[in-house]
Length: 389
Ligand code: RFL
Ligand code: PHB
Image (cartoon, rainbow, N blue to C red):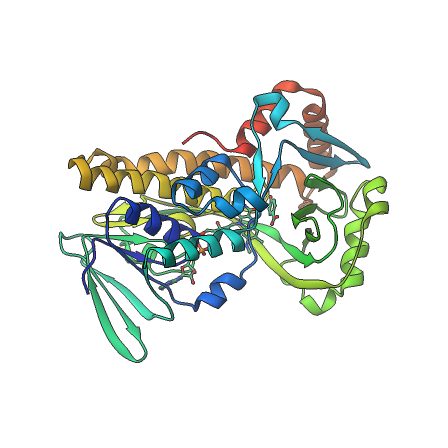
């Protein structure tokens, strides 16, 4: 097989990139390790920045989001039994879209299907060859037979555990990592969300987040030890703990019900540099991971796709190669800033096992400053709705 851009990974980054390139006449093949049903069963992000919404519209995959998504002009923060609002709309005239990653991925698959996009599922042993030459190729095994894709570029959109990053030699790759000493226990339940907006709560028992997918589908998270067995967390135990961590007026109106999904996710910050090696680009979680506090992971994947699709389109259209040369630096500049914000939100809102009374007072002072300072609220709003591309 031959294509212009071989895309490894059929998650949101790979599908969005494939769709944007295809619309400009650039041929792609997407290789995905899992089945489509598996990819669509993953419950992940829920908050989309305007940049991602615009990319989805440009990709012809934004119609359902615009119909069914919820525009949030602010968010709520809770601490010490009280809550206050950060008014994105009033402070900076911007908002975010609440629409699940699962739905984004489904819309991208539908858009790819409408254009007969080539996505090969259930591939094994994906290997990138000769990425540092002018003739890269990718091999993989499908139904027991090895196959080969010759291409001009390889886009590594294969997430944190993929092969793309590992293809870059150790002598070239720099990796930065911070692992947080806790995880997020999340549930999805067919109950009305406790509030119209998200609530991020700092509590002495640990962080809690109230989010949502639609008027009758809630997504809640609580900070929990990452190695806690899920069996320890019955639905009742989860609801009791969540209620304890919220201001009383929110806890009192919480509607509970059976969970339809429950899982624990680890929290880490991770950045790999550079994001290009020869003809291989790293995109999204393949290059960086942020803790979910602040909802930046999928949105950073989208800004990478923006820089890379623009660079490749200009290369093929105008023979302009500067975008390819600057891809890594441009993407990383935004990645570091969003990583800083996610790290700050995580550090300000969670309980750390080694937290001293001093550290706790610092968190409370930070939150009290935020509650009372328009400048601090503006900084949060700018970062939360997404820094410009
Ligand atoms: P993905 O989604 O991991 O997709 C990578 C795809 O590559 C495939 N793959 C391979 N395919 C072929 N060959 C191989 N060798 C392969 N190895 C892997 C995988 O099967 C997969 O389909 O990466 P991508 O596309 O870069 O997208 C990144 C986002 O999924 C991720 O950043 C977000 O989900 C993070 N995230 C959030 N981001 C937000 O922007 N807002 C949020 O509200 C938000 N909440 C979250 C989150 C992530 C969470 N978890 C569980 C990690 C909440 C949670 C709980
Ligand atoms: C979610 O709805 O899954 C979600 C929302 C906000 C976050 C993280 C996750 O910061």
